[in-house]
Image (cartoon, rainbow, N blue to C red):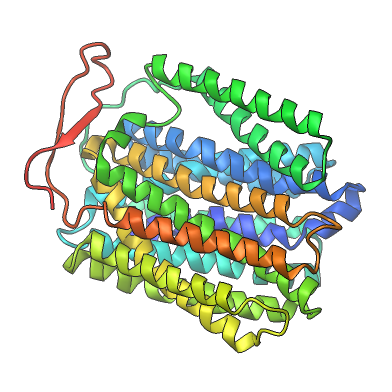
Length: 470
């Protein structure tokens, strides 16, 4: 069991660590390549978009070709791109290699979760997913500290090879892992046109939010909205006609899967918006340093990491729905407290208490929601289910960053307490919606049946669970 969780966690830790530790290096990268704030921001946005798009594809590849095989290929690719990125001669090359790194990392998370689903001991899947969620949260929280420590002694180029020891350890463990006999590998099917439309849609949404934040002309904003609607329409049409869509949309026919993935998106949106809001509030409204902001956010991030294993264990004994619902209620309580106390002279201890409450809620629910999403699908679709739910997590991150950028505009939102109350109110609304989503997650999984789609016999999409779901 510990070999399984160590293998899954070592691969999964790479994506959040490389996301958050690079964020602290953006000012240095901007100066070296003489870039604008908007341009250097694409180093983060491109990474998040690539992760969101590639997660379901990576999960499907594991289902079709073998999860351990695809996991190994993802590790090797991440190793190559991590080393190559540190030698980027210009910003364009850096962005391309970062996107390639994100695609390789996107293969790891869903296949690691699928391996947990396939090989976890009876009644312990929630516990293992809770441990996995704890590792992910710890990596995301430790990223800025690792990045700051590295920049204190060297260049931002030193950040990327830091992943190498994790990759080598995972490859060594993978040699000891026996996936067992499974279905023979099939030819991978990827809808490249649908994937391209998916990328275009996320890029268009990001550009629209960025244009709104920069105060673009109304005509330009209208053009962006219309163009996004056209791309969205083309994407929907393509997904309905494709035999291998960008994500496993038929899974959303399962009420529990839809509820679990909505929960994942909403809680990550609330968390990411809060993580980005607090440093701006501390600096622009209270005029205090970033060190305080880091300590306050640590109150949330550390508790997420500490609580996630316990939340996973609770979901194994009491059920997925009670653990997710309790987590969402705690998240909502912390968000309400933050909104109620949002004023210029709010005490740091009060903010820390609200963030700690939110962290407890996030940690308690993460394992339950991830497990519910994966076990709502047939075992043969476990990788696709994990990839699709992980896609929703990154969609929440993209929306959180974009919305905050749109609200906190230069010259309009800086130092305005009313603006931060608006953002805190949005977090409260998001947390309330996560409570509603949690009520529709199953408690204990029922068996599922798979039926062949007469129109597409090669796809075999999952149908509704058989009677007995609770």
